[in-house]
Length: 113
Image (cartoon, rainbow, N blue to C red; front, side):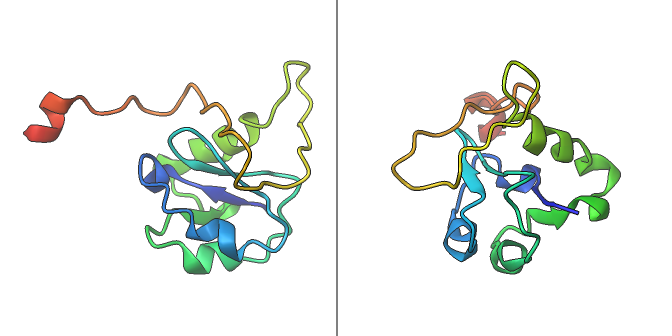
């Protein structure tokens, strides 16, 4: 059962999880990080170090965050439907395009209220 990054990571992107991953399967997106579903070896190192408690095993996701299992998987899907295998994340890579189902950024008016 792979690990999944949930919504708590959106617009936080602390990134400490990437330093603990022994296989570099955590990739930076524009607004959050994503765990590659086939590169993850399920060691749990990232889960134990995440400062915003955003990482869970897929079978531990609550109903509100269950969508993130699909989001983490689909962000690596090629147009053909196959999972892309980038071979490990590095800091010099451009961020991956975020999944379209991420909630929109809060507006400035919403943040001030």
